[in-house]
Image 1 (cartoon, rainbow, N blue to C red):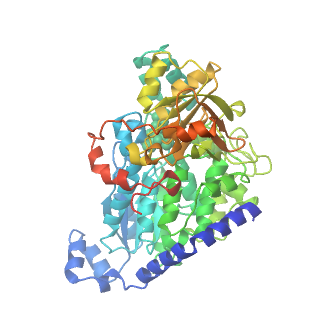
Image 2 (spheres, rainbow, N blue to C red; image 1 turned 60 degrees about the vertical axis):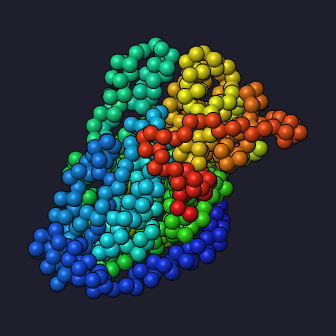
Length: 589
Ligand SMILES: O=C(O)[C@H](O)[C@@H](O)[C@H](O)[C@H](O)COP(=O)(O)O
Ligand code: SF4
């Protein structure tokens, strides 16, 4: 085991001793209960099984066959989730072949960040994660299940499902992915057209044609953003059937993985070959394995928020210093857009998650001895990896990584604590020192760009974008104009208490600044013209103003209009109770 991984793991175990102990005691009490058929009232059971076919009623009540709950994020709005429409019938059929039953326990909401990017709906995006967790809990609260199958792929949906399922940690759970769409217009070429549009060189028709050629059919978008980072991390946590992440939707291979997920959740049930409740599968080593996989692949910055919340749901306490210390030792093994030109289909063809797991295990960067849903633990996830990389521009061995350190860094200094994805930023942009231009909304920066007012070296400070202010939206629409300025030779960086998409990356961005401006964070004191230094090498985020001046600086007022419309009023309490980004922006603690 690499000493840094061992040290960080031990620190997390120590830090989490009390919360993890209480968590495990809680799930042990739930595990000790009798099966639902013997535990619940007759009316409760009759209601639960009323709509089942007679044969299934008999199986459950007389044979006491395992009953699997399905929590599904199916809808037609996320191309990645549209394939789930047909899954319940397949799951039921496979379960019946093994003497078990399946009930759809409930649905959860799912937002497509691509549809809402740059619109008011994006202000619901982060909080939809906890709404999904709540909906997962509501689904599983029927409490008649011996295990659960979790159907979700995208950004906040996997984190929400996992947070919710971990609050039922006594249940064996398996995630069931649906796979990526085929490769269309490359992400690089799509981004080029966007930058041309931002400069007024092409019109909407041309842009729509390009976007539609990139996003063209059922399946997950092919960049390595938050959704596909979810898939990689679930493989690293042993919560998938190994290799299930990136088989294309609508194929025999995909259906075979889906059916194997049913057999797996039965295998790890109380009456299966080896009991593996999700609350025990997700332990400190499992969480560290996910952190390592994120860093080794330059995964989404969103997971520096979501995986903190997920770990917390299992009684495990992690923070950005843990990520940063791991990043100092974990090598970068993959270059997938935005960290490179390849897409997730080319990543899979070159060796995919199996390559990443095999290489990280061989280098001592991952814990092999973890419980997982499949026999053979994490090593099973590495089986089938090619002996050599199928494409060395996409995947490298741990002996010759793209970089000796991971793709994400912690920045800290007078402006607070922030994170930056360096794996996607050109080397000569890892340190930016320039005058601040301060904006209280992304729209204000976009308008300034359109008016030609920011043709300069600048650190764009976009503040009041934190969880308590407006739900911490992704500010991904800022990528094209900032990239245009960067391509024109200006030194530009973004500093914000908001988020960026997992698909963002070429412009240096210090994001998730904590504490957020509305919570007294220092960003509220920055003025146009202040010299700000974003230093991803030293890991610092500073404003070069003398101490006395800075101390005397007033805090800018929050002047945004009240969050009404698009249902934002319904999330008032989420904004009031949201924790800081580094604490996972949890709204329930
Ligand atoms: O975190 C993410 O990965 C993003 O939220 C992603 O899910 C979202 O869809 C982006 O907006 C896609 O990128 P474009 O907006 O560039 O298509
Ligand atoms: S990856 Fe993003 S844009 Fe694509 S379906 Fe998922 S949420 Fe929507």
